[in-house]
Length: 160
Image (cartoon, rainbow, N blue to C red):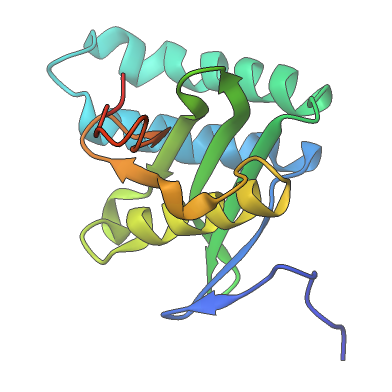
């Protein structure tokens, strides 16, 4: 029996693992499917129905083929099937800290806490990477989906 990767954990029947370059096609599919569901009527239908697949695949192949040490990506799997992902840029901004670049869950898996769970997993991995001297000072700021220090000089400064 093979041992899971070091940070593979199961929360509510979901396993998390780092995103790697061969995941580009899977990540692009989840991203495009999520946008089709969430942005219908906001983005042009022509883009959502045709161009988005190639666009997202090009983006993720480029991003994952040359990751930086600041990139942190997590793929969520339920019963071995990819159902969502999160991608953050560690220490993206001196004031605001790390930025959540993408968080997508397949439409049929929304509403069950998977997005929140992906956020917790990203925060844990960012903390492991030494991003946060004290990761308790960081919080999820909905609806903007940024990770930011929420206490600065004793005041709640919020996100951007």
